[in-house]
Length: 300
Image: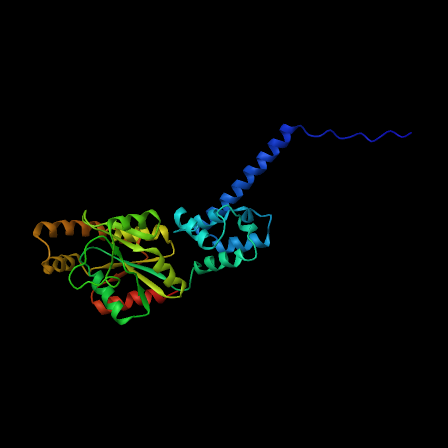
């Protein structure tokens, strides 16, 4: 009778657990690396999703849909949760495990957020009294192809201002809701009184429709937009000279001498920030400056 082959001893349970733990750690690190690539712009979320559907065993496929969405610059947790609800996808669902009906919905959403040729979103900013509003008004009148965001504000309408045209006038409670639900690209409290902010959804919808969007906001707002939408083009509107800016501010006659001095001090600080911007336009002439901004928006 031949002897039965010797059985290889099973590995101890502790060994199995350690191996499984190491594999789980490696998988988490791989998924975290994918998220960092999306956050940095090295890969788009759409590229990650398409890869996960081609390679169902990949780290990309193991990402939860909610993780993928929150790795996209400009999408916070609240916004991501609302998106998965709108797409009818469970927040715990993994990208690689999406069904035949869910994949097209996620693909369409991610495709709408793909970088576009040219500068789809531009921000016009600059020091106080440089003429941002005047240049923006000229663009609005002569370039209807440019979409202007309508800011939300908690202050009361002034004579002649129209709801939905000049501003969206909202209550303090409604403004708090917009902040809590991540529905503002940027917001600020101006002069310690009213709050102003840029609603996110109209901007995203205009870009998705292929339009160029221009935001005319202050320096703080421009920085906030750069954080949330890194691909946005920031344009700094500068005066021809410091003396020109002083004359313009004093010539307006809308502030007391004390307020004028405060605004000039603010303008010095704001002028020093022009190095943070992608482009600089000198406002020597309103029509010429407006044309330069529009040309920059059309340039790829």
